[in-house]
Length: 368
Ligand SMILES: Cc1ncc(C[n+]2csc(CCOP(=O)(O)OP(=O)(O)O)c2C)c(N)n1
Image (cartoon, rainbow, N blue to C red; front, side):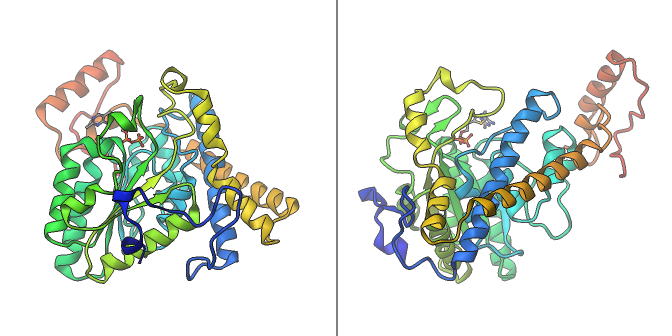
């Protein structure tokens, strides 16, 4: 058990795949080399999607977009051990994790294009709509975990959040309740070193985030978040613990946000290029590529073919989303409540008047 062998108080971090591609055998079961290749493909697709999304935002075709570059190992490996009945509560940065758990890329693209229907999850896909309020996701996940526990339906819930979120009272409440009731919940904190411009050391005086779990009465574990094998192994253990009634786990995935906070921000204002360069050497994709090369499972031709297939998949999803007619401006008022409040009706009427539009201002959601 990793949670017994690695002590967050001593800053011990689980790492299986070193940045040079060498690894500590054996591979975490039941992963074989073909599965590692598949994970590499998923990570590559996400990087392509991310870069293309930024390009579309620059062209005015996506709204504000939250990049995940540098965090692809977390996106892929945190979801691989989950089962379809498991729930996921995510922030704006988990496009990759949501896709891994069954949300189509078309739908995610629709969301980033500002269409409310991008949050309309397909039947059976247990992913909550993206929740922007920082620190809200652990509360949602704990509620879902409590429901799963009460119904004994075998599901668990995963909360995604960042290092910044750990300063929110909500995260304390969520972890406290999960500990008291020993709920089947995994708290997956991606410590990407910044909360917009606030560096990790200004967020908490605690040496690690993982150690905070100890105060709630459950294990916390620090893992190299740029190591897809380590994240997978640690997450798998946490999921098994949750499913078998051993309660919650807090995972601190130590990683780095390579891009901006969102397309609305300029990270050169608050962090050094030297720091970014240092993290480039720990690129999560590069180390899997090196591992595959050393294992004789990689070739340039395979990579080119794989990238071409991923590019086609990404482009098709984005084209399908772009082909959906733009939503009417009234949509921005319509989906918070089943029935719009008088204030929202008033705001909608004011907007329509300013746009010189006629509206069916009764607040009923469009059927599509
Ligand atoms: C309750 C709340 N306060 C402030 C914000 C504005 N805000 C958006 S993202 C963010 C930083 C979050 O940082 P972190 O939790 O580390 O996640 P990251 O964005 O790095 O993935 C802030 C302060 C918000 N969305 N919600």
